[in-house]
Amino acid sequence: MRKPPAIDDSTEEKARRPGRPRSARADHAILQATIELLVEIGYGSMSVEAIAARAQVGKATVYRRWPSKKALVSEALRQLSEDVRIPDTGDTRDDLIALLHDFRRVTSSSFIGPMIGRVISAAIGNPEFMTVYWDNVIFPRRKAVTEILLRGQERGDLRTDLDLELVLDMLPGTMMYRALISRHGLDDVGFINPEELVNTIWAGIASDSARPIRKTPRC
Image 1 (cartoon, rainbow, N blue to C red):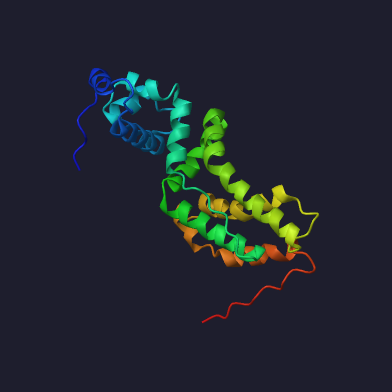
Image 2 (tube, rainbow, N blue to C red):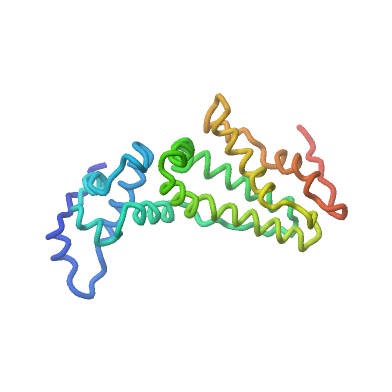
């Protein structure tokens, strides 16, 4: 695929007459370049200059859209992070399983997977990046799990004395641990069965009145 011709600042200014929207092509090129460099060299090593060069636009074009590297990376993560859909099957256990299936799919197949290790190292040396990643990728998913857990307590499926933060760490945290520690690396996330994971934890979080676990017949 050929790269689009470079978009210099004067060309864009001529195209952007008063009242006309900014170039969608330039927006896409900048955001794509941001993600590519984030995966390739990490947040601390990337610069607005490098992003502009990769996107074939002028640096001023980037700054007219985003005031800082942090704002640009935040927008790029928001654009590429899929909206978190909170399942509501009527059963808390099934809701958790459905959400973890989605988590596994995203972690195994998208840009998020290659960034996991870099995020952990960035948390030590660059807390600004960790804040950006947390706000735009991690927090929306923890919020979704929290909503399911609170709804489960209202239904009477879950114990009311649960430490919700601990449960949040145990569910997606198990997948993250497998991705980081396993000798198979990120590919091993795909081997985690969300149903088995939820079933293992369920005995400790379910209320006495919750429906028993349905045994899945083995073929």
